Amino acid sequence: MKKILSLMLVLTMFSSLTACAGSGGQAETSSRAAETAAESGAESSGAAAESAEETPETAAAEPPAEADEAAAAEAGTEAPESGTDSAQSGNILVAYFSWADNAILDENVDAMSSPSVLSPGNVEQLAGWVQEETGGDLFSIRVTDPYPSDWDACLERANEERGNGARPELVENVADMEAYDTIFLGYPNWWYGVPMALLTFLEQNDFSGKQIYLFCSHGTGGLANSVEIITEAVPDAVISDSIFDCYEEDAPSSEEAVKVWAAGLGIAGADSAGGAENTAEEAGAGSAVSEQPAAQAEAAAADRLAVRCGDIEVIYELNDSPAAASLAAQLPLTLEVEDYSTNEKIFYPPQELDTSDTPAAEGGAGTLAYYAPWGDVVMFYGDYSANSSLYELGEAVSGADQGGGKCRPLVV
Image (cartoon, rainbow, N blue to C red; front, side, top):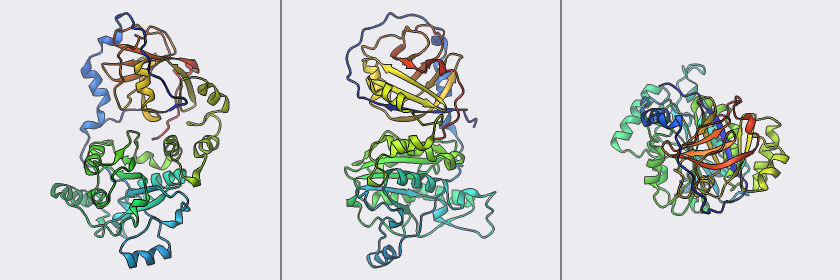
């Protein structure tokens, strides 16, 4: 499967939008309208036809403190690990499943040829960074019957478990799930879904009313059906549309990106107060996610959107249309960005925008627009032809001339 070369962006809304009716625009023609819907579908659904053999993601849990081990032996469960220095967080749990932490490690496994099964692994690293940012308690989901360290054998067993609807037994459970109201749940994509042990964990705990944020490390299949499977398993939970996912080979370099995502959710615990500001400061000038104080003040001055992609930063002033309000309601987002033609970059928000009473886009370079037939948001950095299906969301007030630049990849 050809992997689309993509750039990454981080969208942050600095003030809430009030949805008001905008003036309508006159329908006009555009060369973009000549593009076929079939071509669009091929570009935006590349992950749907991937091979079933997704490379597994990895992670390994930190050993619990001796006091926790004693308590687990007595109560039959294990509390989230105290070694994370997160006792003050109180209501945030970072739970994850990893292959490395659930495998029988063969002595002949080579670190270069079989890195996915060795600790530390992809999902564990992501979970650790989420914990650092939120101050939550870290918990590794482990099975009593470990998987083989050979991926083909692990894949075969995982497929059998999926076909049989198995629920592998877990070594321990969270000691007091009622103490948590916010759950970060990390996992790899196995067979276009989730490891069956993750379903064991979800089904043996009560997640009613709890807020769940998902993060996933995967191969070319992306999230596949994993979100739907998790949603079905915990129908009474509130699963956020803001999902962090990255390719397995990119996970080791995703610390900055995953921390920005977690900080943008606005739920950091006591140990990470000011985490978002600290992340930006630590990133340094010109980094993929840093924002200078002047830019922050400028974006906060109105209903504006800051788009950061590598060293490029563009600030848009959004209009008062329902479409702009629809986009703002989905923020913050971390999404793939694609170059399209020679005058625009595009990305696909998770949900369609409401184009009712939204004016047609008739501006030039610096326009932020929404192309309804494809469901993509367009950042124009060159002139374009108007189109009756192209709706204006706002105009750039800073950095519009940077749009055609090359972004340093921000792995998410």
